[in-house]
Amino acid sequence: MKFKNQVVWITGASSGIGREMALEFARQGASVALSARRREELETVAAEIAAAGGQAKAFPCDILQEPDIEACVRDVVAHFGRMDVAVANAGFGVIGRLEELSAADWQRQLAGNVTGLALTVRYALPHLRASKGRIGLVGSVAAFLPGPKTGAYSASKAAVHSIGETLQLELRGSGVTCTTMHPGFVESNIARVDNSGHFDPSRPDGRPAKLMWPTDRAARVMVRALARRQPVFVFTGHGKLLVFLGRHFPGVARWMISKAG
Image (cartoon, rainbow, N blue to C red; front, top):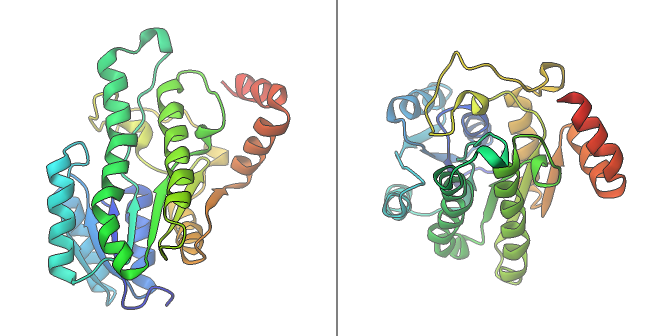
């Protein structure tokens, strides 16, 4: 019960890693504020937490809209009275070769994964300073590695890593900590969302199934990293290996990625 009596706000909480993190935080005693665009899915997660004896409430929010984020934080604090943890999890991937991507593709990718994340932190931070709380940023091992057709996504996640490094300096001495979490392949719907943000359940997921971590396992280690206030947390075995190779043996890493397609 590491988060007993704490209030945790999670964006992108309607499915995937965000949903499983919400369930894990609730198991550890937290009251969970759930945000995403899809109210119905959020209400389903809130009902699941309530059925297990936990406390959760849906606060629909589109991180592409700054007024939404500001209002959401205000509503969460008005309802729960405080905020102890903010997890900026909402995001998506724009896929395509660099020569194929339009300005609109780039703007959408950076608006969601970078600007939306940064504004999530901005509006949560005054309340986290009051509670000496925790910030969680969800990045990706793609922040450290090149990949065909993932240039925009990788650039956005490299920016997430840089934002986390900056926050760790800016918040020094405040009591607030920032944990930037970089997963490898984890089961999620990210591959089934197109470049315009539309979800298509029939869209194939080209990521290697044999390397995929189950989402609940990923959520457990991410919540643990936040509990320990780790500055940077890279996880999945293959993720750690690829990041190590990318740093120390970049030629080998590029060869492996090109062979894997």
